[in-house]
Image (cartoon, rainbow, N blue to C red):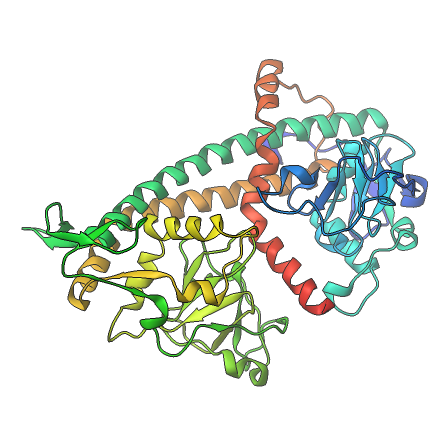
Length: 487
């Protein structure tokens, strides 16, 4: 039992498959007796616009947009639904993946969403309960539609679902316990994330020195060149480069042209179909993960099949500009439409070198230069074509890649270890929430350190930031799939 917390003294069958046994004195009711739908509309459209997602719950839309980005594409917000503090908002199109939450704000939300007010209190408790995996599965089961992107959880179906109801003091105790415990977990994750950031900065420094200065072999190993004759690169923000190096645009060092991927949505992995590569299928180091799989039918995938060494560029969303190297994969694979493929001409430039180059600060400078000229962060094939590549001779490219791999191996291993720790802690957090809200552990007598709780309260601002950072790529993928289907 988690945290040495004990179960309740007695249990009874809930009669609800997704909840199992519950404490003896808890009630079971249909949601229509717990929540009431609200449909008050804005007359001015001037209230705070709210955003709803699986990763951040309910947030202010203004907190999630970057400079130059539009708050909304709608011509007017008049008629948007009014949301009061404590209301439950559900994105009925994505309820099955937990896109809902209890609002901490007074504001407005899309008319396509549903807004509910609790009839019995305990809003925060139900906010936790309805975002558990079992609840999401039940919402998916009760939604109507043929495929995931077309599922809708309408109010009648939502109201017909049975839920458990602890006493109001227990609802408060459970929510308070989870606020405290999840804040501690998020604080732990914040520290780990900061450590990863520092390690990545160290790694980027190694890469940047190598691709801008080159390396030379000392007695034991390759090391950065500290003194060499340089020349202007011809690009102001790029600076000087070794005298015998060149600068060429990406379009002149690849085979053929840059190519967009398939627009069709992928399906469950099928053994005879190529794997369908999406943004979320790559880890933070730019390599293919082994825990996410999707397929595209062979006939559709054929024009988009990948070759060993192909480089994929993300063209939009939170991961815009991110690069991924397709390498050493056993089998056929293709790629999604929001990725752009470049096939390096290895008689000119090594795939490994280009990939390392796009992990450098020079590449980040180029992205910043591109974004300064655009109102929306989107890099299409036309812009990637003009990406300047610092080009040493092939022999030096080989030495640079070997140097980077040797110098960053320990850093990569450390980052991988920390990321595994974060995943385990996130799994613990998910399980802890599920155990508490379903009464598998009794938290009524749990004592919270008031001093620690006050400290954690100041850390609460990290929660949305952390959730968003961990999962924005997946959200981009879901948004893209919906856009493609709705065309």
